[in-house]
Length: 145
Length: 97
Image 1 (tube, each protein chain N blue to C red):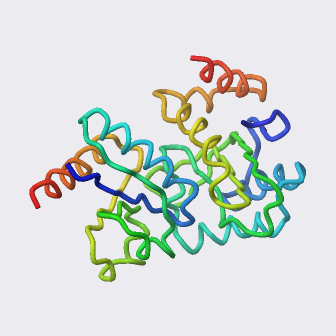
Image 2: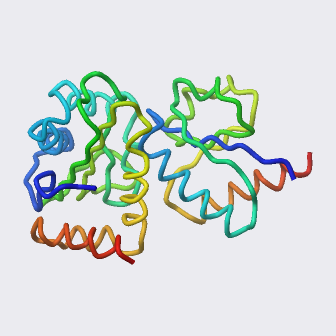
């Protein structure tokens, strides 16, 4: 679902857009998107408002499927200090970035991730995680249940 | 009972609308309501046939007044109480028709 190289724990980000650039950068390095998609994720927050902060402390960053997406992928970062989107669910400690080539084919994987994230205390566990390994364990342990 | 069709709507129809869809499916299942829930984006949701649109309150202004069907704004997609109350209110009204 989320590969090890697409996760960073306790990163520093000045503000929400810097945080999206970091998580977008992971997808760029993975060869999943072009830098244009990262900018599109930032534009999406500016244009549509911070509704993407869909859980307390958690934002789902994404833009429309486009040619800037080279393959379906996910990336996740946790922040050392939270950022603020102007949402009732602020402050944000965790950002999950999604990119999808067609807006549909990534849905099964995202549903699995969503199931995990919507479990009680899951966000708190992720915020507390100190390393990528710990984050991977959280996702792995709850899939097998 | 007719199979109700509910569209959950977010900016692009492929992210947070899925979270809302999953939350609604959970609620509908618990209440033994048969319904089809599918995701849509704010740009095209009005042209998708359905009985109701559940949409983020922040995006409501983009479709308000243009929909011929019930539009239900949701403040917090993950607040099960809010989703359950609003979903069942719609379902009960729909079934009275």
